Length: 112
Image 1 (spheres, rainbow, N blue to C red):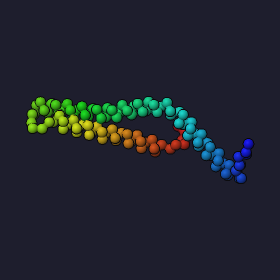
Image 2: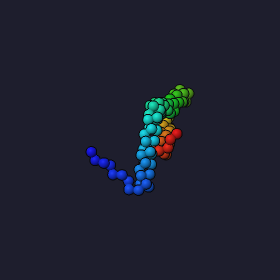
Image 3: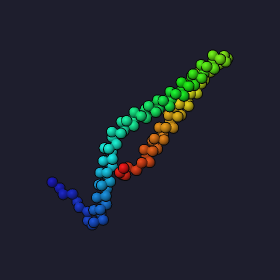
Image 4: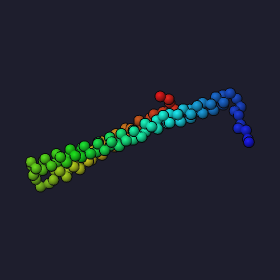
């Protein structure tokens, strides 16, 4: 069995203890947040789903109404369906990127 080399002076020892303490607190924080991560993921899927589906359905509904009340040479339903889908995808991208930024800005070693 080999012995671990010990730090030569107290300042190196304090640095090593600080690093170990920071790693232990990061692991403890990750354990506490692991249960929350599942619910957070499900909530984010719901948010993304609703933020895409609602504008898409509203666009399609408005398009159907316009096609029935103001018939013309082009389909309002198809145009507004695509516009709603585009708006919904942009909205979902906005929320996901906002959450991603918030997660990456959170300092890893802080305890709550």
